[in-house]
Amino acid sequence: MLYQTLVDIYEKLNATSKRLEKTSILSAFLKNLQDNDVEQVILLLQGIVFPIWDERRLGIADKLVIHAINIATGKSPEFIEQKWKELGDIGDVSANCVQKKTQATLFSNELTLSKVFTNMQQLVSFTGEGTVDKKTALVAELLTNATSSQAKYIARTALGDLRIGLGDGTLRDSIVWACFSQQIGLVYNQAENDVKLDEEQRKKYNEYTNLVQSAYDKTTDFSLVLEKARKGEEALKKITITPGLPLNVMLYQKAQNIADAFATVGQPASIEYKYDGFRLQIHKIKEKILLFTRRLENVTSQFPDISKEAKLAINATNAILEAEIVGYDISSGKYLPFQNISMRIQRKHDIESTAAKYPVHIILFDLLYLDGRDCTVLHYHDRTELLAGICAQSKTFYLAQKIITSDEKEAAEFYNKSLLNGNEGVMMKNLSSPYQPGSRVGYGVKVKSVMDALDVVIVGAEWGEGKRSKWLSSFVIACKNKDEYPAIGRVGTGFKEKAEEGTAFAEMTELLKPHIKPQEGREVQIKPAIVIEVHYEEIQQSPSTAAGYALRFPRFVRLRPDRRPEDASTLAEIQKLFTQQRGRTKNI
Image (tube, rainbow, N blue to C red; front, side):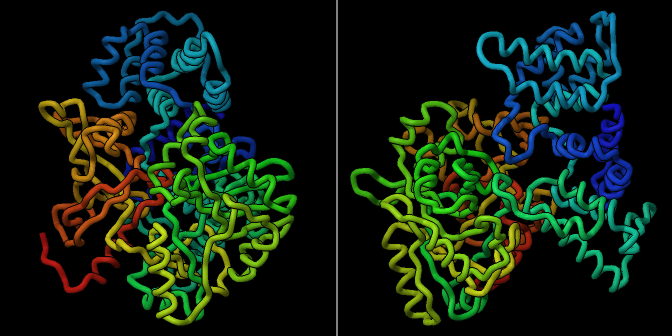
């Protein structure tokens, strides 16, 4: 396939904000895709060249792309940087420079999909002296042979910022349309941008959507899902959990209190400590251990201590377990807040010394796979019994503390005991429930001491003034609504001026800089990438925010590097929290 074929799809997707129109465009393209192009196309549509769970990352800096543009077009770095300030997007700059390039090109080859994909993957293969020059040469080679529109997306892909407004939900629906529209009787009316389905068709549509979503949740691999979906419904149903491929984790709703939790999960229920750590999938494949965060990041190399413990403690050949990883103080033995170990997730150097400085406990709470058996279909109570049977517990590797009860008083006492032990609260789970990856289905809920907390995405900010002129502040925060991130207000309190006091403005600025979009004066737009937890006093209706709601007195609590933007609190959750508030609040 020629790379231009994919670029044409990029441009069409970028030209519309209508989700159904995007789905129609993409589904028609996927339907006619050649089998040998599926994997590369699906990855490139997501703006990546390795699966999301692959530990390899391009990690390309802006300066490298600027140098590559300079080599390919003859435009000076100063000209390129000035254009970047004007246009606000290095992809648009790349297109502009290629269109007006002065560099003489003796040989120009039409770019293929495979050539672009291969060059991009090779960017991670270099180490040692001359690495930057070799990487620059690979990008420059592509730009030299690119048209202006191709150059735009080559630069964006290199930097991991495709900007075509394509989320997982749209990609999933496009697979449904491409593979099952005939079975559903689905027809898209472009003039009205609408799909009209009767009751029976809607039922079928939901069934196929759930089937595709389930297949993705089990594999987190859209290329595999498309490959099987093209073969039919039965092939899709045969997709199974595989050690080495992380699952989308099952998500838990918030409950207002113990009584509300029992009403959701039923009685009796399992009640376990909710630890202040981060969630981890532990995959054992014979003698090999792989570790994945809930963001599907492979953090095996960052946690050699966990790998060592897991290899010794898990009595199984192949298994997938879920655990909460909690930091503890060496001298007191007490649990530490999440931020004390969050830095280990991104650590690439000094791994051993960091592990010694920030040791962890591995607290197991679920079993998803065991020696050829998909355990997600089993009842929760049966899964945890199997889990207890295959794990040799130690001082640092053990099962979550829990009770099983129908009694609200006993549950409340256990909840208070959890708080006294430095935990966030409790998890309450239905004993007979299966494990449903990726869903908030009411099989389990969390009860926390601070209920007014949300995970939000930073989508904008403002450059400070005076001594804060080098820092971003007044962060625009957003929830998730399908593939969009509507704003629900700003947060500026809770951050520190000095790093030793906590998360500082300078640290936030460095984290957000790679994601800054075009800026107007002091205001900047930011690509949804960084998730933070905020507390707030109440939720109010607000016509001035994109979400239609705003948080009153939001305060930054901590960074959530274990969360993807897709994991942020949803607009539906905020609407539910709003209606649950005691009394209705006034509009802003």
